[in-house]
Image (cartoon, rainbow, N blue to C red):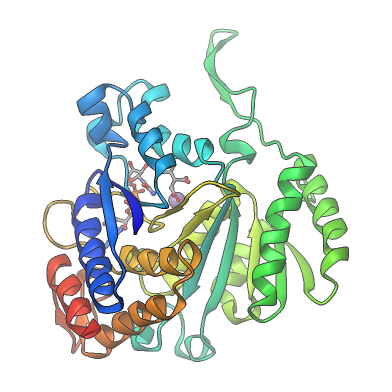
Length: 357
Ligand code: NAD
Ligand code: IPM
Ligand code: MN
């Protein structure tokens, strides 16, 4: 029996998580596994109930689980709240508590969604299959000192982008290992022409590469990488980068797959349960309207089965059901194009369930 701690969170979180759990139930039935769910509060939902975005009870439930599933956190309701207890702090907190330093974000353009891609057809034809490996518990997100205050009669604020050698080595290893299972190429993205922290990043990635001489390593400045990702995404296999650059580049990569509603992720560390989460947010503009695309969350379940439970054939089955559903012509609003059938979150989820049969 596998225990999953479920954190639906805010906005579209509960809607997409419901569809993803229905898929997991079906996989359990079909392959004779039993999955047990325990729900816990995070983000705005936790603030409303408990006054904090990450109650201790939630951390304890996550620790006891074999894996964690997250919907999304945040929304306009909590935008004016004391920054130290914003909903986003809940997510950052659970990543840190569980030591989930590696966020793996595979951006794949399914052939069925070529028409949803914003790039020129000749670029789309070459395909997109990039794995963004984002450092998740360090960098400017967590660096100290940080400050929001007043100085010389002016408001001012700063954050610190800091990386220690061991943080860089362990994320580089995740990228090199991932590349070995793919096309054997890693591009490390930094801003080493300007930032000291990036020079150290590059130096350590090069040093760690000595243990992976079978993998090709290149380096790119982040501004160029953002440009190359839309100019010629097929040049990339694995991209490894820091917390902030990875956040930005993975949203960009997601747009190339048709929509941010398509991109799953796995947040992994050593020894603790992994957290599986779509890369998008709580989408307040469409929350509660049955319009959200549940596929990123359903694909995050597939990543959970593969990474946390070693259930590759079950994961393959979900991936295939998602592609079959797209082949059958169903589209949520974010991936809709002419000639397809517009459906809501629930109908899309139900279609994936039928495709699993
Ligand atoms: P967002 O990802 O929530 O939304 C950006 C745009 O993409 C919106 O137009 C939204 O409707 C659309 N979108 C996102 N997911 C979709 C889906 N599954 N199906 C269809 N359309 C989808 O980003 P934002 O608007 O910048 O942030 C909204 C809130 O979410 C903020 O509070 C932010 O901090 C939070 N956020 C949370 C996470 C997370 O929990 N992992 C990630 C990003 C943003
Ligand atoms: C993401 C989100 C989070 C991040 C926020 C909500 C803390 O944007 O998961 O990509 O920046 O990591
Ligand atoms: Mn993000």
